[in-house]
Length: 260
Image (cartoon, rainbow, N blue to C red; front, side, top):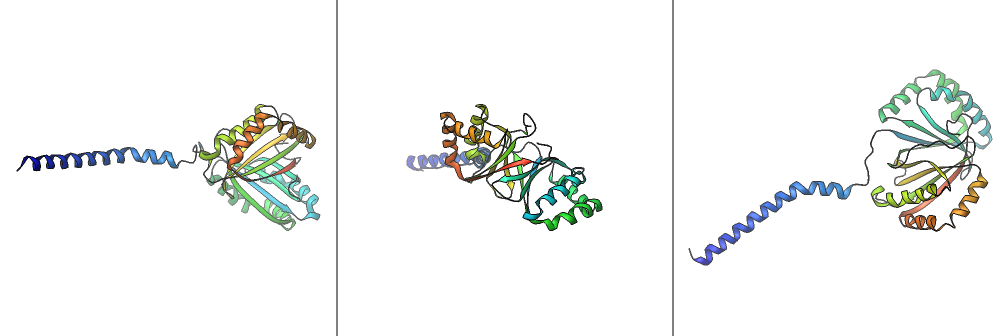
């Protein structure tokens, strides 16, 4: 064997060994890198979720619906936790909006099964209230990792449910700038956030912020003042780069609402 051929064989062996080592390193390291690169944000720490329910009521039966619900809601709250129940004043006519808390999907399934067999609930409420409705809608949401359910500083006032349709990608894409936009308003004392939620079932890539104000007029004054604040303007402008659309509702709490 010539010296040239010997060198070529040694070089080929070195290249093959390097290739095998590189593949071995990729197999060990790449799964973690891939998991990090496709992650859409912090994982849920527990199974607790919040079901948003919106009922659309026949206009001439609004009062009857609210009266019946006020009388019979205890049959429902005996089975699972009601966070809040509101009538919509602006941003949607003839609607009520309510939020229910569940520890797991299994718990919700058991609650729904129990209600279906509860003759008092069916006879005294469901059979009477269903003809009053034109439609229903629901959405499953989780609290964003940096938010907790808060109570308003006092009873009364008005609530605003602001809904933001964000670009696809999840909190890994827009989470930090959205948190900054909410935090700038709350940290500056302009408004109080009672919870920030992101959608799991329903319209995806939605974020909901539940705000509290002393009155609708106070909200109007705060909005005007905050929009002149350079900190708020900068934070909103940054988050709007990830925004597709937004909508809101101004709501009044019902007498039987835990949040009121």
